[in-house]
Image (tube, rainbow, N blue to C red; front, side, top):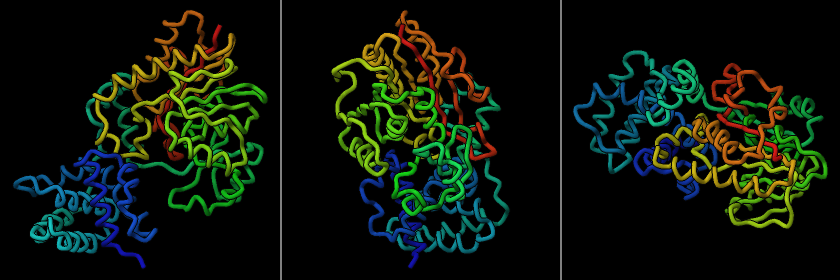
Length: 420
């Protein structure tokens, strides 16, 4: 039986993990913080936490006039959660306020503040809430405004608030229309199937048969740009969780999937097995790994800030910061150099990151061309995609506000090279 109070209590725990402990939700969930909950309550706790994380700063702006001093973290989390709920479901204000008070009373850290929680939320709920869209932190927002302009950044922030639908990549593209009909999905440009969220993935038609896998529409583009041919020798560096590996294998390439993490590589093997596809899976550091022979094509989805995925990971701005960037940028450059060395003459390389920052995309692309005189832009590979995706200096720049009326898309940079 659903337990709304237990779900809210778990959502507060997740909020505190992100905003106070500065941990990603995925890390907190890996600790089995919600293991005692029923599946429905666990799913609701995650939805509540995600909704609150998308509205932390706007909620605080509403709460501050009613606070004489900063409340304890757990009380603040209860208030933030309630304000997020009030913004989403104003018709349920009485129940939301009552639930927040009950939640405070049930927590020894907040019990004495239950009356305070009640008073504040009654005042907040007395008038309709019109929360502003949450802004990105300055370290991220400023370079994006400089690159894309204020209007585009506001549109990106709006896309972050909207969240992300469920996207699937089809094993056999010729089956996309039939699967879309069976799933009640929309076929997006490029062949991705798009569904509404809130579905149980493993219960969908075609899951057990391995007819598709979960993969954001943006994440499916790099392998399509690489356009491997049957029998080509291809490496997928930094392969986990394996969506791109599956695409390359489904296209008939002889694929080597490499990742530094055994745990993450286990997911690649599981996905390959479910989908009936084959690839050589190697656990190694790409900077040190020595293959038997050079490759016809390489896909490098490099480690990055992941700032293009905030619409599905609203916890990221609270955990990541500018101090993470120098090490990531240096690693990306080193991986590009290594990938170039593993290519045959005439071989193709697609470099991509799920980052919105030019320093991890357009700038890396230009710097690689400057470092390697024999490396050329493969303009043909990135031709034919929507004009709005054209990146300065070559490549594709995808943003969360692209396809906004159809559910958006993750932020990605994708650059294609050819080795002379």
